[in-house]
Image (cartoon, rainbow, N blue to C red; front, side, top):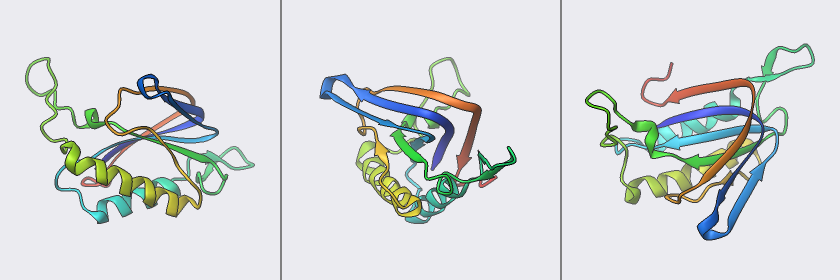
Length: 151
């Protein structure tokens, strides 16, 4: 499982074809991708890690607080392109990304796990839809996390 976590002042996702729009305030925008070898333990580890990341400023201006500590929001968007391989040629290969039949239930499980660790509902994109994502990156702070590498 691979995620890109961005600290945001606000973020939103819309799906014009579905007349869908959701927004989040101060917190995190999480882009998430899955591969066939991902398990429930990857989802659990990743959701716990994201909700515990100390990337928000405390009263001293030091990044010492988590999204949970500040009562922040999470907007989670599925994004299979995080598994793009650009090793050969100029057209990325997405062979490592799990197919929708596998990744869609994983996305739902991941959002549920985030909600459990955050202690409140998580805003979500629509899996597989052509989404328009807007954000105001705060810092900027952007972190890439891979459940197989864990660095």
